[in-house]
Length: 587
Length: 51
Image (cartoon, rainbow over all chains, first blue to last red; front, side, top):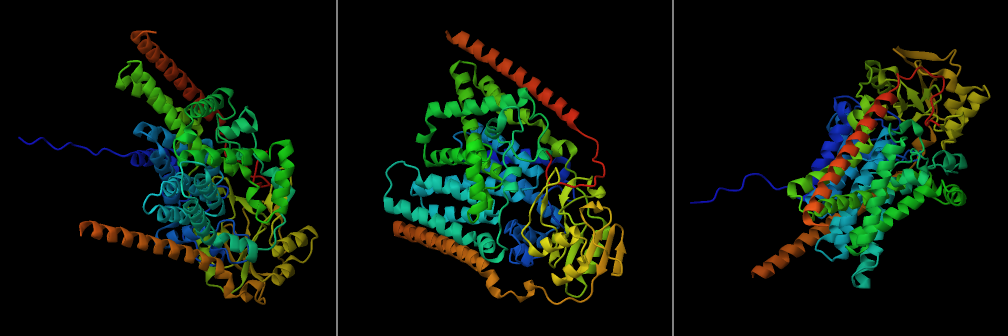
């Protein structure tokens, strides 16, 4: 008699991690997953993001969302923008869960590690401020660590795998790519079992080559196309890590929090009990890791440990009196130093490490239970309860941050105005009142980046200074915007200044506070009035400097394309090599 | 400590940890409910951060 086939599928660690991440994403986004857009702070998606120079980061502005806006634009050509937004946000949870799960020893460790990686103050706060590109970069980190470790072990196709993950990491933007590079370099460079120096150098060279080529979309735009940026020391102070728990800046960072904006802090983080429990578990994980000497368990863990500590140090540096001056000097003086300004983002490196270590902690609890003779079910039950600590210490994230994140639709007047402007003769658009952020009644009055830069397929001039509480501004970089700000402050001829900057159309949002600055448009022809939107035509202007730029502005994208070609060629060579060796074996 | 004692210690410890975590979860949920604010009113200033 034949034995019946074993029913069911036994999931691997990666699948369990991915499913845990998926569950976290569903629980975290909750009502925000309904059709419609989540619009708050820097989280701005539109029905169809144009594939233009702004999206490519070659319009001369500072490329803050390059190339992740390009990814969003590509997706929004294939599906509604709101669906692309939900897919990208859910990908954060699923990918980081899968990555941490794969780094774990057991399926229990995978589930508990993935839970920490997908449900923590870092993810919550960065999501609340709309930094979805950072989060996708964060999600790539465990995969990058694993791919770099595979290179260290000399596994077949490891360099191709590393190249693919570096390409994906580059797609998430400058921050994600830099976080990824830190992890890769740490894993490749840490001391370990004997590995030929030449091979190690080749691995490092390969990683740096792909990083530099793939990242050219943003670094070329930063260094060559964007206006020279003198990062203000105001920004360093405004964006340094802050304590969102009673445990100080370092205590907050250790638990994955510490973002500078108290507007995105979560309920319960200010409680000694809740945040104290989180800190206690993190410290326990670290103590256990030191006791177990986890750095001996392979290059992935060793590299992650070094990268995590480096991330923690970078995140804390701007808040430590002695190191603050060093950070200020680095941000304001070094080329590309602006990447260090919002330093709390580096704590993502630490959070991935904590997630892997937390998985080990839960595994240890189960082992203790089994050794004590409690039975497998009881030991597993207690371990599972312990594994729930991330949910328990951050209940505020559940169900769309307690219902705060709600999907909304753009008013019909926005879509009709967008279509009307797209049909108009060439000319840039300036948006007023003169502030970068809005609060729309139809978006539940949440603070959100002005969406018109993304709604329109032409250059949109906005005030790019960051308005901070207390009346201070972090100065922007766009000289045309600075000229408008000066004209408004001096009560000058704003329409004339706009025309000089190539602006033909002025879009006024009448439901926004005018205190931020409104030009005198008396005598200017109004060509549309729809709901809270008024459109004015300043008359024909001579083409702006943007129209005179050459094709060399796409050089960064050509370099990135070269990275894709190189990785693809490597993949083809790998597969040819494998099939060739198979033929030899069979022959 | 004997095998039986170890088992009891683990089971009791697990129960205590479970009860404590449940209490913290309830505490967190109550704190969250208390933090839900009314919709923000119209303000003349819109800032990127809060202090």
